[in-house]
Image (cartoon, one colour):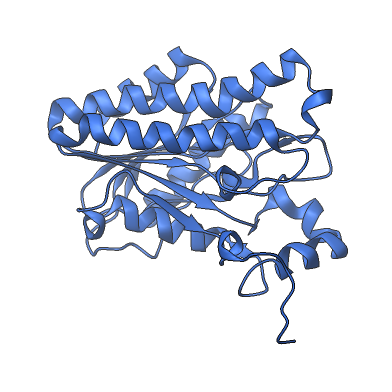
Length: 287
């Protein structure tokens, strides 16, 4: 999502709220998601058909706790319980070889790759003047370089097979920013431009590439902000609907872009922010 996460200045990007994709029947999907917020099988698929064959993979920026490998396995069990076929993989999105292994494992297991979704990211909320080079490299390494590695690897498979759909998680912060989010926002803006560039390159091979830009989404990762009543109300007030979004609402956007319903859409940025980025200020003279 687009907000800056918990009170911890070193926090996972709440964009991990991008929970699941619901593609058309029989498709093979790989989903790189936050280890603490694994993907779920979306019940709001944009097209009918049996559940997809799915390789949920956890993405992490650093050495992960013991539960890291367990999260994608639990997701795989959920997919299987709902009638799909899935296998869980643990992958570090900041490690190019890990990403390549995840893509290869999916293709080896199912013979093709129809849909690829990447959502992990991190943010260190602090002003540019206070950033260290190590912190800057860490954010760039996962958010931007990690997304690059995934898009490059997955798009090569899809181009060779003659089609596919890729979805990367940008953020409303690619369009609007606030103090302390300059580095994070720059990676999300770069992801958007990368998506657009790749869309022009692999479109002739039938591959679609799109981005989603979530706003304030209620997830376990944003619970500290939600629990701060002042912060929760301030963020709610900046949306047209006066509320936070849910992970399922972001999942529905991903499901749409992954499905055949979006067959003529590529290079797009689907903003899921309840109007946050269209409002000019918070003053309503009519009230």
